[in-house]
Image (cartoon, rainbow over the protein chains, first blue to last red):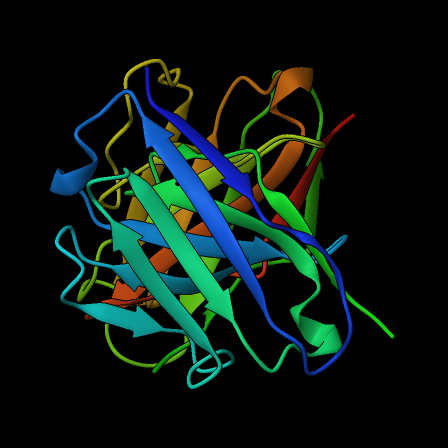
Length: 113
Length: 110
């Protein structure tokens, strides 16, 4: 069955960087576009970024454009989110999702001094 | 760009029918597919409707989706409400490869 397992979250100071990972299994990872979605505590879902199946096409929410970079390594079946210049408002649970049909359990990012 | 606006909360009694709306701020609601997600407390979102009105396997036929171009909105209707339907519901659509969610609607079944 499809499994998506995020890692890399934690507490980080404003302005610093963090890289999230999402390990995929149970499907042909290289055939699917992948997304990052976040949810601040007690708030709604916010789409963050998408990468095409082969990594060549990417798009971002305006709120993270220029600061976050989505990438993938199909040989490792892993999705990444490089987050630079973190702000307090980036604090959230970050989910990776395959086609929005399958979601990981999320990893919590807290940006605080 | 556009926004998707949902009511903050709705409530209804078990056995009744409830409809949650999702209004697109600009551009036609029919231009891009609309999805609906259910998120129970402490759980990840699951798809209840995709491509405006399609139900994934395993989702009861009590859940239905539609779009209305006259009001430029999409709707999720849940009939025969059960207490297990109590959750947050999010609509979603896209423009090109940019995706967005509505603000979410908290459904209370009381």
